[in-house]
Length: 445
Ligand code: NDP
Image (cartoon, rainbow, N blue to C red; front, side):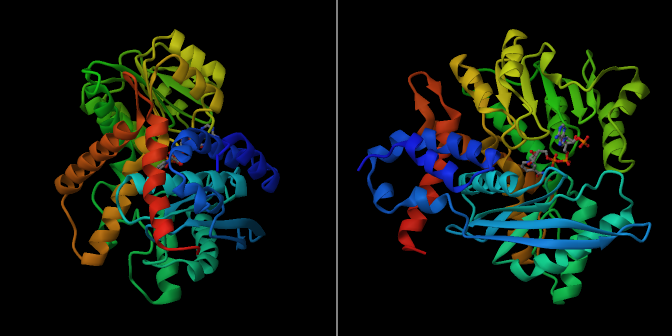
């Protein structure tokens, strides 16, 4: 029995037409597993790949709500419960107009491997809606969230499926979703993560994805006798992940040259200071404004409609969204001196960009490794909820650091190739093995 990744993917394409993002994510993972699968027939005999590629369950539902003008609006809600071999389904909810089944299946599929890498008992899932929170009042967001949860609550639970935030779902949305869950079930339990500190949330959960990405970058650099201190870095996005990647990078002495949103990029040649970053946090999290306002406030350059990838720097942290680095962008980054790329976002690099990074021996960390700190601290939030206690900031931060180091070690073990570490291969094999072995142990279910 021999596994042919290209043939396998052709079949996946036929079965899932119109799902380009899902096919992209599947291709990256399956191609990198080919040698590994052929070296050990047990995974082929148990048809692990054929099974893991299919979500265990996909729920699609109508979400009607009433806007401030009294008009009824209808959105589509989703939850993809992808794989529960190693724990309850776990993964964020995304509210963004581009959300569809392809996007959520790519995110859910990636999540299986990411969650496995954390070493915690977390299965893979993802969900969301094509609802756009931009420009909506708090009351509209609340009515939408309540309607969304009025259906979703039937399918989730602290030992079944534990959603969290993602693009467009931050502290405000998690609050409204949790309130409605509690009202419907009369149950105060850890069914969502990213909760407020006063009502069951964990210290460091907001910071975890961004901080974790920087801790991971430090491990990668340490492995090549280098460090982040003194490096100039480009960050895209100005949401949750970008803000805390910037915060930790500045704290460690790196120079953060850029942040962005969907309207453009701000460029600070001197490097953002903690004060400027605080302004951006308030602008984005409370005032819900556009990034240009930060450029106006501090006299920074604003590159309207542009991404940061044409700027000179040592490292890039894409922290906005999928496919934000094209092949052309990858070439530009390399020309401009970038030697390290750390994916804070999920699948921000296109397949073409990844090939270019790998051919040029760029130190490249895929999202499923570099941004695993978010779900790892979500796992710690679940543990604290079950134990009915709460760990200090210092305790959770220390656990996060250790988790990111352990993820790095696992990847190095499986990704060593001559004198180089292939972080994609290492992450996919290490993530796959734990889930696959658990699926074999549990039989054909
Ligand atoms: P937020 O909603 O907090 O921020 C998203 C940021 O990305 C905003 O600056 C937004 O700009 C920008 N953005 C979103 N869509 C686009 C687009 N199509 N084009 C250009 N810019 C865009 O989300 P998060 O920070 O939580 O998530 C960012 C990425 O990190 C996502 O890929 C997510 O899946 C991933 N991630 C998040 C985790 C978490 O814990 N939050 C965990 C692991 C991964 P604008 O405001 O203009 O829309």
